[in-house]
Image 1 (cartoon, rainbow over the protein chains, first blue to last red):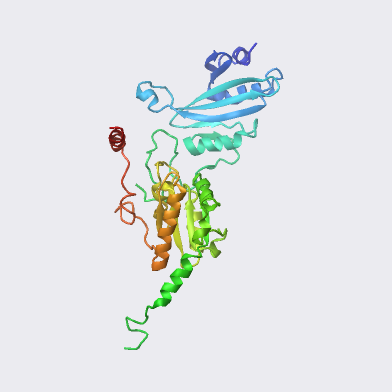
Image 2 (image 1 turned 45 degrees about the vertical axis):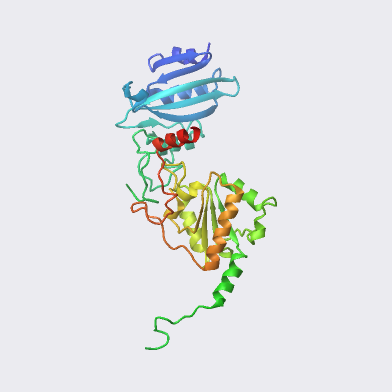
Length: 164
Length: 189
């Protein structure tokens, strides 16, 4: 039984969709169930996902040249790995544009701390329950979030300027 | 009208020439190395090209002991205040060399994090474009700097991106895709 099948069995209501390709397993999870699913992935001995490999986000604005309209704008992507069992899983969480907010996983994986700060810095997605959510790459005076697709590529910032 | 308040209360002589001569052959540089241009800078400084022939072989890693600021590599917005502080800490007379195209104009970067030319922050005396510049190019720039020091000239002005004043015209030609295609076509025909 693969990790994906296991969480599908346990959280059939909370998983919106899933796919697996040559052992590369992905599950799209409802935002309100993210913490529960992650907790299950980490604390179940047969799964034992003790390593958060990556945490990033995708902006689907103008996706595929605007031909594909998604019902949400962002997706936060989590890559988990189990050092003990040598298996991986990817979780995706759709995030709305109006209130871009996801629950923080810093209480489960300490390494989520800086990843979440980076996602906040670059995409402006807030993480509820994060102990210290401030910009990690850019400076405090920076206006906007640089990796959002509607951020103008030649925008000048007040620290260096001139602001345009 | 007293002697001190008269408009011509100084005189020039061969003394300035002697000072310039002394200064141009004892360049103590502060290498502000942030990126890949640093490798080319090191190559220039080592025995093969030997910057020491020009009296510029001994970098000082304190701004207070140096008189030429070599800005080598891309400057990001976050680094910009640090560069400004280092420049402010240097004693007069001081000169600034922009090493590599990123420091000259921003180079191929046009994004949220890169300073589009350090001459928007500090006055630049010599621009050495190239990505990275060849050591011969660097030595050429160094000799141009020596000439400038000999003449006792220092740059005092910043580049203003709005008026496009304060930067050599060759550097401020903007890059366009059409121009690039034209350049490739003319090179291949």
